[in-house]
Amino acid sequence: MTTTDFTQDTPVGQIATRAPLATRVFARHGIDFCCGGGLPLTQACARREVAVDDVLAEIQTELASSEGEVASWEGAPLDALIEHILATYHRPLDEELPRIEAMARKVHAVHGDKDPERLGAMLKTYLALKADLEPHMMKEEQILFPMILAGEGAMAGGPVHVMQMEHEEAGGLLRRLRELTDDYTPPEGACNTWRALWHAFADLERSLHEHIHLENNILFPSALGS
Image (tube, rainbow, N blue to C red):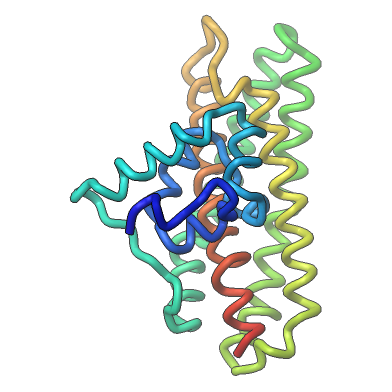
């Protein structure tokens, strides 16, 4: 596959589905390919103020590389995809979300006087994201995923719609965190915990974009069409 298979009007979610290596490029530029997966590439690039031709060239470089293939889940059995989502994203978040909260609270407590408005908003935004994600994953695991595994995915339109709306809310909070952290750039003189927190936010965004992409653009359409 090459970038000639895509145009500037190809939705970024479709690119991520058909060429998983492209997600590396999207992550580098902060392009949302999960909740914003329906946006044409040109619009997604405009939002991040990057040149669409440069992004296409970077995607081509990734596709031409023989190193580090990324698995494509398009057309995979739904039970295998759900197992992958649980093992790769849900279970790590059980540990990661509290760890990041502890760092965020520490940075706010120790350094809040240096930038009270921004660090206060950072903590509030992260806590809102965590409060959204934890019950969201529980609803997927207790309601939606069992429906899909029982072969009832075609009747899961209601739960899927709710999950998609909650994904949109999470995406908005991620965008706010990126804005509040200057694209995860630690300020001059930031301590190790502060730097580790910004790095954790960047990793969380990357992981959630991959996670939500697999659900919004592959799992849910496949389940509803079953």
